[in-house]
Image 1 (spheres, rainbow, N blue to C red):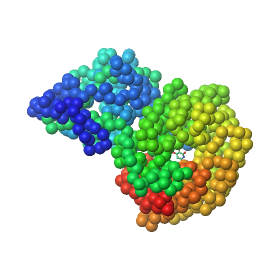
Image 2: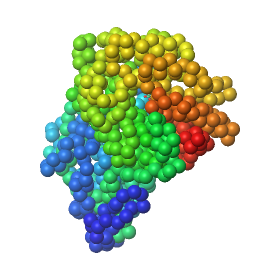
Image 3: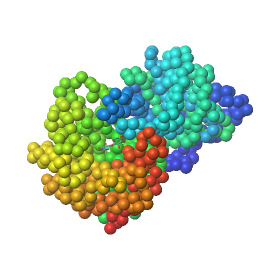
Image 4: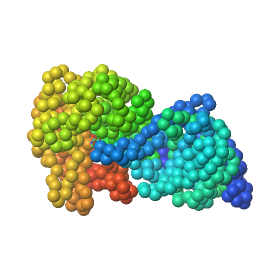
Amino acid sequence: MGGSRTLSGRFGWLTTLAGMALCAWGAADAAGPDAAASRGAASGGIDLLQYDWSHLDGATPSVAGVRIDGLGWGIVPPADEPDEPVIDNPPINLRGPALQVTGDFAVSARVRLPAGASAYLTLYGRPPLIQDEWRQEGEAVTLALSKDRLRVELQDGIGRSRHHEYPVAVGEKARVTLSRVGRQLVVDVDGRTVARVDDPGLFDSGRVLFGAHGDVGEDFWLTGLSAQPLTASADVSVDDSPLPRVSPPADSLRALAARNVPHLAIGTAVAAIPLVSDPNYARVLARQYSMVTPENAMKFQFVHPRPDRYAFAEADAIVDFAERNHMAVHGHTLAWGEALPRWLTRGDYSDGQIREILAGHIATVVGRYKGRVASWDVINEPLEPFGPDLRRDSPWYRAMGADYIAFALRAAHRADPDAKLYINEFACESRNAKSDALYRLARSLLARGVPLDGIGFQLHEDMTDDYDPVTAAAFRDNVQRFIDLGLAVRISEMDVNLHDDDSPERLRAQADYYRSMLELARDIPAFTAFSTWGFTDRYSSLQEWWDADGLGNGLIFDPELQPKPAYRALQAALAR
Ligand code: XIL
């Protein structure tokens, strides 16, 4: 019956209403889809607001419902495409109710709309893949309701989105119901069917996640949200399982490292959406790794979308998951020239105001995770891509010159004196003009008493017919001078892009290469972490963003989350 709990096939418990469906909707089939939809709208169903809405950015739950603010969350296009618009990136309630659905079902929302405001409610059958320069849509429908208009937006995969608009006339309080009836989606507003569109199979995954947002600077109230099955054979249940806790097996990377190489954390970059929507991802992560780096979730544009607003839901999910699974968290990143929101890069701020913005940002973000995030990439990529000069194209450099580096490190140290503070850079593994400059920078900071604990070497590499990656021997020869300054060092973002050729021979070469770098970190105690930039080719920054099937091939688990030769090679290096 409603409210009873059965064990779900995924991790966690389900609250199921299948029994209730039998009692309440036994006659709906015979009455036809129209009647089913409108009866669904009128029913009580499962109350979805009783679940967690406190982890949705922009949402403030209270007894009156959930107030939804518009945060203007967006993904800023890369610096070399300054005229491209910001990509909308509305928040998803990753910790709230996830529906499991089979057959016809309805979701019904009650909203309170202040004059002029719009309410946006999104149901995701498959959430998007989000990077910090692009977003690949999954499957979703967004209902956007204003006083006189309903807009229905369908996302049925990359490049295939469409929308429809319908006139409506609603008062301050309105009720919107979305029903899946056979292969159609039906939208009722205040009990009247307004829209009927073909369903491209948006919820064939059997799972529905929710998102809600408003326009920037506006808000609305979600005063009710419920879900119910519409026929006797349909089933709707809620999976509100907490973030899972998983035990690492003795031959996992993290267990082997803990036993044999205790100075070395085994780390990876992670993203919050797969963490909560793909149980295999969460399981492999917690079994194999002892450290996580939020890939994008702590970058400026994600955590600080408006001058006076922060958005921590994704970062919190990652930190909470890490703690549940006894993993350390490496924070990424505080002062970087990229992933900056337009309010900052296009705002009219004085140099003094930019200093204050950076100081406030660091105090807030580091302060929030004090004692929970063990180390930070305070400074990311301070140097020009392939030269000895500091990058000048960030607001931080423009306002403060080279001093922004010491300024940010000091601010981070004030916010959490126990956190280990790093500069993180790429193309500095071997001796070259850039690594020489990084060395001089680190040495001068230390000489001035600036709190700097270590250097992250990203180790984003490629392996093709025409290109051999930097060798472990060259890295060893270069890294020692940094260690001699008393600094810790870490491999922070390793991946090995094979591009077009991932033949068995190439996968073996990739494995040997991974192994050579892990052996280096294993044999030098100053290395604190061996961390890759993701672990599965399914969710990889090496993916072609325009091609949903163009997965990467640079990581150690394949797109099915199966170990590649590189995984076995790392295991062997840790087992000794
Ligand atoms: C990358 C992310 O992995 C992508 O999702 C994003 O689109 C671009 O940024 N060096 C860094 C990381 O320090 O922050 C970058 O992450 C990869 C290069």
